[in-house]
Image (tube, rainbow, N blue to C red; front, side, top):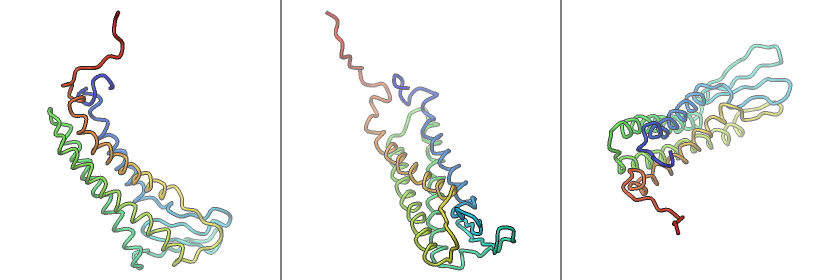
Amino acid sequence: MVKYGLDYTRCRWILPLLLGIGVIFGIIALAGRGWLESQTLPYVHQASLWESCTRPGQGGDWSCESLMNYAWGRAAAATYLVGFLLLVICFALAIIAFAIDTLRFNFIRGIGGLLFVAAVFSVMGLVIYPVKFSTEIDMTGINMFSWAYGFGWTTAIMEICLGFFFCCLPNYEDQILGNVKPTYFYSSP
């Protein structure tokens, strides 16, 4: 990849692949029931982005309450969902951009800007959720933000990192396309 850059057929799909992995992580975060879980016995609390479930004891039935009844629940879900939809749009645009034989570098920079906007929305949802959840929902015992919440943060971090990569990539257009002669630091005597 170092020698051929993104012009090399197998390496030009790395960025869309990483965006695809980000989309998969976002789906896991949206669908996962492990945003918040009880950390110690009795395991009586479990929550997702959409609902909060509790049970009276270790063997009791779960009773769930929708977080969409709260304004902050709707705000957290809406902002994270907007960030996820922007990520899906960036994934589709990246596939289009890299499928064309001649890379469109201004198009790629636009994808990077859109990824930063997606990251802002995702981070807003990921910050609203724990702050308001911990102050407005009664919790028993020790609770922790769990695996699905971690997938949400992983998606947001990937959006930020890929945004930088997509924005900086056009600065090296000549090197990527092979229009610059390589510079060798060793000279023969």
